[in-house]
Image 1 (cartoon, helix red, strand yellow):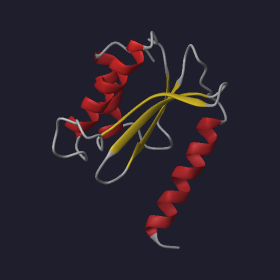
Image 2 (cartoon, one colour):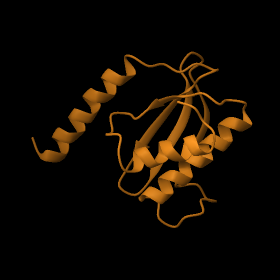
Image 3 (cartoon, one colour):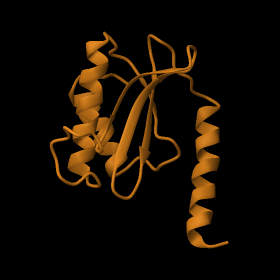
Length: 120
């Protein structure tokens, strides 16, 4: 097993463990984050109704920054998702880091969302 496959398996195991303990609701959705090497994606999910309430990513056409794989872009995506959720009168969320370590771009996204008014 190569290193890349091993890392992916470890993240998947962490992801399953996290998802076993948290669940989103219409009042307090789950804020799920995914990062790739070049982009970062986030969506607010209502697990009870099984639907996505809002989403934001660096791949959107009107995204302001040129690079999507850095910490500044992650902070901007956090701000975008917070604005979209507040437009739907949602201020509280449950943060789902999706098995990723809470540092770097994941932490910047969370800080950007908190700075824009989300609570988690």
